[in-house]
Image (cartoon, rainbow, N blue to C red; front, top):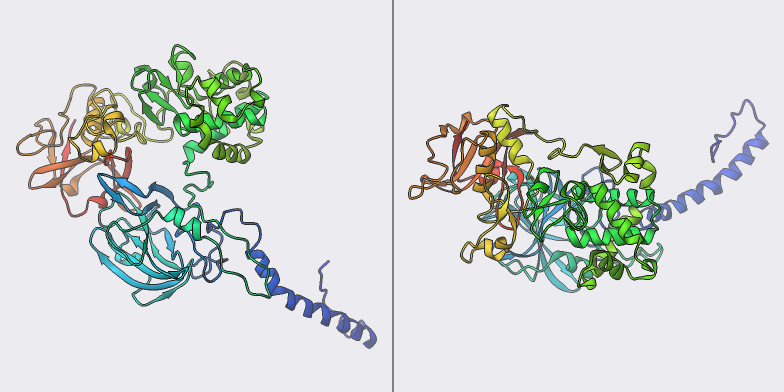
Length: 571
């Protein structure tokens, strides 16, 4: 039955009934017309579940965001379309005066506020940029958006824009290590190094203008830059899966909600929700992991010490690690009445319980988000948990066998194609931190000082990981079955390194194949090397350890446009 049924036809009803319907319909129609603006406003100003962050569903036909009132401020990219790849602050020995939003090429981005475009075009270091001048709280401010291609700039100087208006698409031009939007806020006007941290700046000013008197007041909108589709504190899919796993296992063991929060806070502090192997426990490197640490003999998401909590094989199984943590927590007398910080410290034996304080908020968010995950476990998984978890590794409700590397990625096949094995060997270390001087034929190693350069500024000598040539020599050594051990240097006229190694074949650039090494520099002297990964969506990709402050990853080869490239094939 519809709310406003069609009036009966004249052939079936009397004229008196016709007038009855007219008398009823007119006031109802008038009411609907009068209520429509209020209903629309309510639909745009209801509960703000995304803290003011634009979402992928709030997009007009012209590509702009809806639901933002005049005078509002907005994070420049829609939630779920990006990850934060580099925050505001010191980087590579200098100030990074903005925030980088990594996203696929051509991902839309939006004006952060109402204003006028003052620049839209080529810019040194940025490829192409857009600068918008705003008047906010009576002060002039400029927002900056960088690294676009010419085609990715969708506005021109002089254009008037509004908050949430589509203004460009993500690129990777200029000094860029991969597709991303560089976003900056500059009081007054843009100047090199003159930016302020965009996130707290937006949060402090992130309230909408007062609504019109005839409309309900819109709640204040706190603008929080979320870096995953799930919107959980900047965690990627692997990290959120590990958090969900802890919730599921805790529930299956009957652990109260507070205990699950304690576990999540501990994981946050100890590993930032990552499954860590240890360079001090070589056996741990044989098992699936998200990174490599070097804190004594500590491994896994809880940093449990081998020999104290169990064997490397046991502790590198995240299910077993969870079971062991919850068992230890439940044995602590009175843990339920303890603050989360004290309960976590008691289980971990940490000398600094206060270190867990800033992890509790995110832990509670994750516990709430994944509450009920225990019901997704299969009977076999539940049986394995009872046994200590030795048989399976539960990830997001499924299971994968221990011992695989980079599940779903290239797999190493002894005796298989050389190039494919180069890629497979290096791929298992995706996500491992960059460490200047790090890496050898056996895997990641502790970095060394670079004499006061970017490596020292980023603390590389205290990290375990790879630099670019370390990753290359590791991959070639593994693919060759230990027959080719390359020098730990890219290569130059004064130091031949890998580039001039006679065991490799020089390849024309247009004949490169996946697994070939590509060296970057000028005049035969090189400073970087990566592994040609292949082509994705028509774009050449490079697997490499890029630079201090970053991690092993796959990036568009176009990030090195303008440099001479030398291709070498081994095997």
